[in-house]
Amino acid sequence: MKLLSVVIPCYNSQDYMRYCVESLLSGGQEVEILLVNDGSSDRTAEIAEEYAHKYPDVVKAIHQSNGGHGAAVNTGIQHATGLYIKVVDSDDWVDVRSYIKILDTLRQFSIENQQVDMIVSNFVYEKEGARYKKVMKYENVLPEGRIFRWDDIKHFHKGQYILMHSVIYRTRLLQNCGLELPRHTFYVDNLYVFTPLEFVEKIYYINVDFYRYYIGREDQSVQENIMIQRIDQQIKVNKLMIDRAQQMNIKNENLQHYLLRHLEIVTVVSAILLIRSGTAENLRKKKELMRYIKENDLRLYRSLKYGIMGRLINLPGRAGRKISVGAYKISQRLVGFN
Image 1 (cartoon, rainbow, N blue to C red):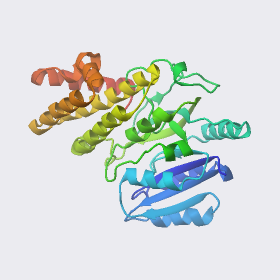
Image 2: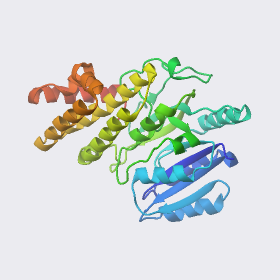
Image 3: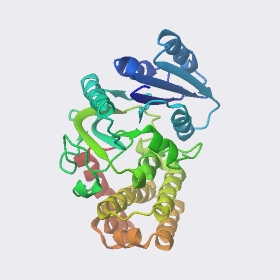
């Protein structure tokens, strides 16, 4: 059995997918790379088949009609056969030295018959044109060099939370946790990392800058203007996360606190984008989102109403909205996110 399955969702990725795949081929025979071609109209399918033919023991090309990023991830999860699974977007890549260290760790788990549910590592915002590249690290909250549980974690800082780029899951856990990402929907990475957490017991943190998260293409889904255009999809994911949180049976206080903070930051992003658009329709959507939260998650609603971040998005009037957007821009520069 392979140590690691790497799922690479690909849609019209001909111009950049090779760099991603080449960075992952250094894992050798212990890794399977699943190239999921999600109905591309360019040479993506041809390139995927080229790699599958050249590296038949490592690369598998999977083709499907277009269903969006979530559908491609779902397909990859279904086909994964490795002990652990990682999703890498086709315009991103991994650091080879960090990759080797991660594989060494997974190999040791296998030799010692240790079953770890989630492995966390750092990621780097590879922002085009940025002189300083922000690294999302977790050394202040997660123990290093040992398997730990939720009771062992410390409180995450504002703006610091676990993303798809940070995690490697145990494959069986991910396949059995009920995760089904919605089709034709962007921003499902939050659901991917949020949904399985109630089933995660054993965690391991590797303090290496493994994942390189590229930000710079004009058509990229995380560009602010694109996110505003697709705000209904951001709100959809936001609400699905709230619904999922209500279904969870979480007894551990540290995990409860973390999930609440994650929900809070996703909601703040939704609200700021709605404010930033400046349209009356989107301001109505912001009010509707807050009503939905009040009706479905009173704890989150209270945190948003009385907490620092919640107060930021609820400042009254046009002047209040300008202050909210200004504070958000400052946090963008400080934290480094897009």
